[in-house]
Amino acid sequence: MPVPRIPGRRGRLQDIPVDGRKKVLLAAPRGYCAGVDRAVIAVEKALERFGSPVYVRKQIVHNIHVVTELEAKGAVFVEEVDEVPPGAHVVFSAHGVSPAVVSAAADRGLQAIDATCPLVTKVHREAVRFARDDHEILLIGHLGHEEVEGTAGEAPDHVTIVNSPDEADTVEVRDPSKVVWLSQTTLSVDETMETVRRLRARFPQLQDPPSDDICYATQNRQVAIKKVAQNADLVIVVGSANSSNSVRLVEVALEHGAKAAYRVDYVDEVQQEWLDGVETVGVTSGASVPEVLVDEVLAELAGAGYRDVEEVRTAEEDLMFSLPKELRSDAAGRRDARALGGRGRS
Image: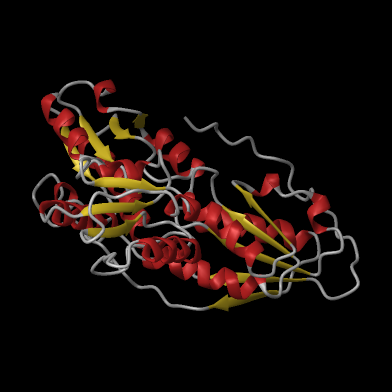
């Protein structure tokens, strides 16, 4: 479970002169995506509608700040549904669950609310369809990640996980003429395409998914940080260590020109030595990060002389998802004003 934040002393960073003009390049889009916004609102509305406690299997999204705030409101995070009292409400996280988890919840008489991101649900449906047609599915993703476990659980006898481009060189399939690739939604686009390239070199009849599995928000944030990184001495990514898309942003920044890049949960983790000789700081955040955490980083950087902030925007986001059906109306049956879950905000 996450460790609660211990606020640090503000104004820690010193305004030390550098050769040029200090500035911040602020990536956009950044932060919350529609699927994350929907999942967080789902927990908040479940607490409003049903009262505390509402149980959540795993972290609703991979962000320490979000989880601790929801805990303070009465959410109880558990690892598995067998920790939830029979008959209680349980929310499935944005990363999705396997059919086995759904069945286990039903067996305990739990009132389940599925906050799986619709883009993850799309990949689940693809896995079911390809398995029904007896295709072998090469699922590109990180072994042990909740999303990968959920997708693989839809067709365990047909799925082989490919964890990296190097694994593409050794994976074996039963019938090279009936093989398809799918992917985790939060991967590096470039690394995923390299994995696919290597797979296709070995299996020329490899089929693509019907549409891109890497979600729009992950791709947009990577495109934005690529542009920022070209002109940044330092990139700071706000996001948690277990957030795949946040970790990827650090890697992408380094691969596309940033001299240094670091991930932080909170502004308190930014180190003075990172700023030594730095003129331009790039700032972004993962898709599960509320904007308030970015604002705190910008405020601290301003105190260190980085007051000139230029937004580098590469896309607009206005996608919205409906909330889970159990939460679209209030207790009296009236449609709730927040029936639409959210949108990418930056």
